[in-house]
Image (cartoon, rainbow, N blue to C red; front, side):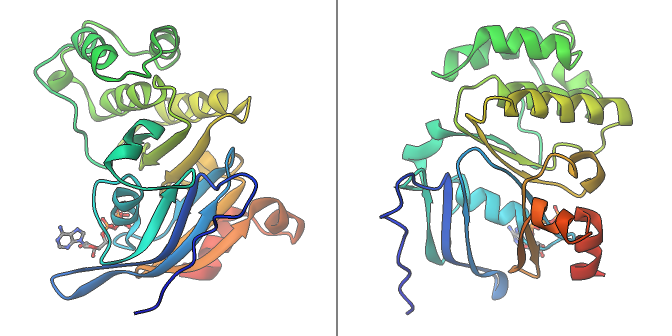
Length: 242
Ligand SMILES: Nc1ncnc2c1ncn2[C@@H]1O[C@H](COP(=O)(O)OP(=O)(O)OP(=O)(O)O)[C@@H](O)[C@H]1O
């Protein structure tokens, strides 16, 4: 079995360091030798077609699933349950309790997350236009997506992982979600890893791209360098996957 040396000597550990990740489900290869680093303070887009393995990879990074081989470190420490406090995940499928109202959910979240920032939650509730009175099960997909983002960003966790934050979300809500992310980027204290198919909304925000197809890394790009070479995120995506 190949052994993978983790980057233990860098001055500042990467927010995420993946080395040689492999995952098989029912004999099907889902992730095939995935390796990359995500520097602290960056906003990385994880892009790839349906079924590429993005959600599976994010679950492993978040410590919710284990790879068959390889290793992940979060801020220099092995990923897993002990790192749950370092990251805030917006999962690809809603996991919010539908029987609660938004207000009840936010009170509950404030109690369960030790790093909950109540002032930030109130600010985001305004910014994302989320009504406290709504019952979660009665919310539209876009309203629930905004509540998920609010929940995710109201924690002080230094690593934010968003898995498809725009699914089923209308244009205005997309803009609100994108601008909430922009607001969080200002001081560079947080690191964002965002899996999305909606390249246009995020094109101007990404500073790095990880392109993944058929479970393999198909490219790691510095967006500034891409632009200097006359390419956009979208054109690079088409070049790799079309
Ligand atoms: N529990 C599972 N059982 C069987 N196959 C699975 C399971 N979870 C994921 N897969 C398969 O793994 C592959 C990658 O799925 P994954 O959800 O990670 O892709 P994705 O890139 O997030 O896709 P999308 O963009 O459509 O959300 C798919 O072929 C999927 O069918």
